[in-house]
Length: 269
Image 1 (cartoon, rainbow, N blue to C red):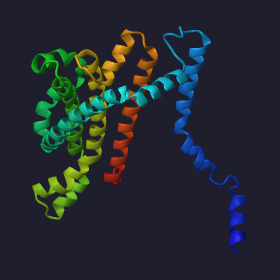
Image 2 (cartoon, rainbow, N blue to C red):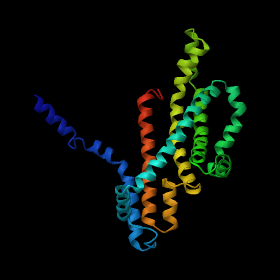
Image 3 (cartoon, helix red, strand yellow):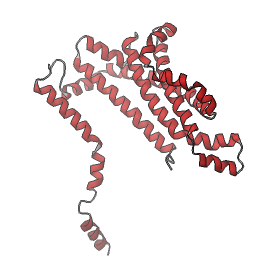
Image 4 (cartoon, one colour):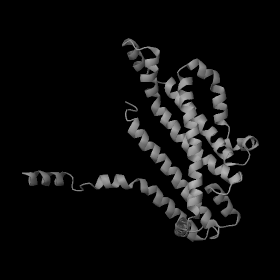
């Protein structure tokens, strides 16, 4: 009987798990296209080989730098600064955003300031932060945390403001007071938007840390490594450092997506 059922299932779906396999491989299509295009341009002669090495040469340089330990030192320095900036921004931004969002009038009164600084390129503020914090690690962390703070604060406040009114009304009908509504409804309703802010915040923190490492004096960091390699025309190391920076940004984004799915599984329901 079991064999008959299995035979019928095979006849109905002769490809078996083929569709699932295809779906799992789909994310790699873009990567293959990118590296194939890169390789074609590099070997075609359209660009000076000195300025654009092949993907294989870049990967070899990346692996060599990782095994030698020099790249790992810069990588760790950048990760530490990024997480320092992000944690400062998250600890300050989430409570402030939730507090502002719980009173729409208060939020509207400072909305212009939030949008103004959020729209101002963070790199334009680097000279100001250098004046206040010098060229120490503090200035890099400060400018990155400031940029991330605005994104996190805005998204947290927006999440509270746009909480589903039906759930707030339901809580009122059941006799909940304002604090209970805030704690049990508004706070939880704001989480999906807050996680969007956190995910965007860590991404912008990484970007600003890299830019700050390029233009503010430092001994270690991926940004410094990229700019130093460019200045001495060590293009393989430059592309390898850019590649590892992109991988770091992607991994951080995926990490926060997984955390979001784990803790905000009701989002959109």
